[in-house]
Amino acid sequence: MMPHAELQMACTPGIGATLGSRLIQHFGTAERALAAGERAWRELGVPRAACAALAASDNARLDETERWLEAPNHHFITRDHRHYSSALAELDPAPPWLYGLGDTELLNYPAIAIVGSRNPSPAGLEAAREFGSALASAGLVVVSGLARGIDAAAHEGALAADGMTIAVCGTGLDRVYPAMHKELAERIAANGLLLSEFGLGTEPARGNFPRRNRIIAGLCTATLVVEAARASGSLITARMASAAGRDVFALPGSIHNPLARGCHQLIRDGAKLVETTDHILEDIAGVLDGYRRQHAYTSDHEHEDVESAAASTIESDDHATLLAALGHGPARVDDLVARTGWSADAVSSTLLILELEGRVQAGPGGAYTRAVS
Image 1 (cartoon, rainbow, N blue to C red):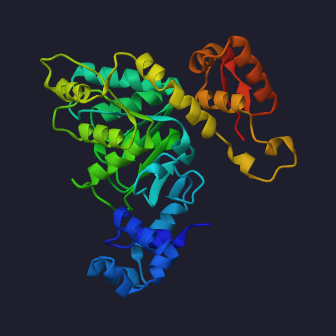
Image 2 (cartoon, helix red, strand yellow; image 1 turned 90 degrees about the vertical axis):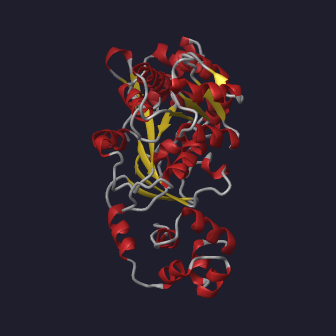
Image 3 (cartoon, rainbow, N blue to C red; image 1 turned 180 degrees about the vertical axis):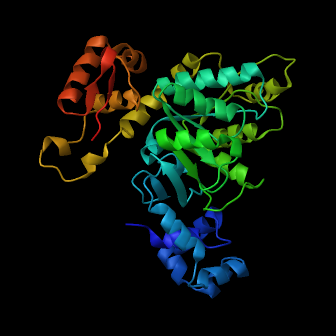
């Protein structure tokens, strides 16, 4: 059922996620906040124009958004949504709502942000693609901001590996910024997830991007900065990640490269220097193991009534771990051995059980994929 009160609030001019969060926290629920009336809103510091908009019964933006949400894989994600990110829920305040286009299940997979310069060096672009591809192949969701340069390269690397990626946008999801990334955004929506705190029609504005960066940092287990000048949005994202208790990694560069200075500053401030993806995976292995066990993939059909008692049984930790390592792309036994650290026999026997249960299927060349429900 659509959370109508939250959607009505989100579509009200002048009520963004920050003010919406204050209203919900103060009154307890979105329904109570809407019913409180103008006097109570004003006492809480809601601007007069926003109060008038809240009180108005006609809301063209609400109608437009409801029509948008009727399309497949278009989502309005509140704190009560079953795929609302448990990592984002730890933020204070947590985003009261998000708009999604694509697969919202990715919000509770282990994720790493890859961010950096919009005008990187050729070596920086290559590194972002390589790290995006390798980390996605390891079963991580690669999260970035769809911007030019490092962001786009990280998304492209993940997609090239048939991995998972989330683009957090600083606009409404009916807009693509920059426009040159329209095709990339379409590929991410089809194979991953576009995510935004901003309602339909929101154009790019300078103040939107720090808020977008907060979502990127909060969503992820760790953040990797590839190239960044000393004054850049990437460093803001890294500091937000650190403040949220997340690991921050930085790729060093030449002392003569101005785009390495931001990374070097982060390293001096306590970020972890990395040269290979193994450095990251080794460092966060414990976090990822716990994350995978707690947030193991559960397919949609397991939320429906089923005749078989076995289908309603909670999957074992081993099954959950292997499904999380498999991700959404094809993988062979040796790939899964590398991702899980298990023996080949353990991987093969668990795959056999999952195949008999109809949850994975074998394909050409010995590659396994998730079964289509």
